[in-house]
Image (cartoon, rainbow, N blue to C red; front, top):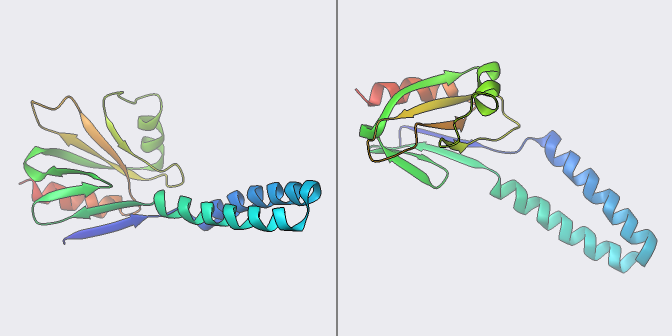
Amino acid sequence: MRFREVVRMPLWLLLLIYFFFLSFVVSIWAALGNNAALVTLAILTSLLIFLYVKSSLEIQVDESQLWVGKAHIEYKYIGATVALTANEMKNIRTRDADPSAHLEIRFWNPHGVKIHINDSRDVTPYWLVTSKKSEELSKLLNSLKN
């Protein structure tokens, strides 16, 4: 394994979601009582943990391919890789987006990489991937394609 990164939901977002869940629990408690509120609290806490686990994005670079979430691609199909600033990432996610691109983005992280795809059989022009270590990932992928 040459590179591994896991992009997880930040604490502020977890707390915000939990605040909304708790306001729902208070509504249930006011309408239905303690038992219903405790059951709802347990279910929503479990749901928050599930969201935290499922929303994480794992990026791996091994000996032969790049893995982003469940998608993977061999190095021979990877073109130029560019690390994006927050402003560039915002633009490419919105007004400059290509509908046929493969997106593995998380809105809570403003940085990422644009990985161009060189495969005549694939209509996907690039992958847009959220990464906290975008410079490191970009340099590594650019060095591996040579």
